[in-house]
Amino acid sequence: MPDAVLPVLYSFRRCPYAIRARLALQASSVAHELREVVLKNKPAHMLALSPKGTVPVLWVPSNLPAQGGQVIDQSLDIMLWALRQRDPNQWLPGSLADLQRSLEKIAVNDGLFKTHLDRYKYPNRFGLVNGLKDRDLASVLLLVLDAELQQQKFLSGPHWGLTDAALAPFVRQFAHVDRPWFNTQNWPALKHWMGNFETSPDFAKVMEKSQNEEKTGLSYSPN
Image (cartoon, rainbow, N blue to C red):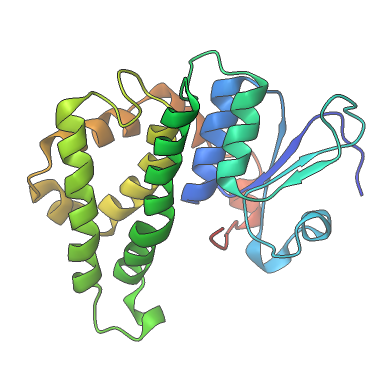
């Protein structure tokens, strides 16, 4: 395996799981090396670390004695690891009860919402004529988020936090399946929240293309 003096994140720029991992690493200011992944030629080192072969994967090498020797290959776990190293913007909930509520919201996103999102975005993969039924079922969950955002500025409460960063890349992916349709929906608070995310400096930073991205023809497999 290659030598490293920093944690290494294997990633793909447009993957929502990888986006949220990068958002948390950026917010924490934990120094790390970003390595993009080519789906048809996955790095041998990444596969040795995580045989499932999906991004993101964070490797914390053993030459970091205080925290080394870890492989973290679930995006939410990467977020939590990064924010527990350093959390200057207080993304982590302040109590165990609040953290549990945040994790429950994220579980709905990663489970039911992501299931409908995949079937809406890729109906042919599931033997569907179209994904409109799943679009409508996912919309029920977005209505819940919109109602919550009408009561508070962010899903995490008074300021942007873990829940917002964990869900926003997936809501964005849903919106981009059919943006004109999304823009006509009566979700004013959700669309305002989404627009602020998409135009934020933090999002722009984590979506910057790496120098070798065009040359390597990157792709990804969802985590």
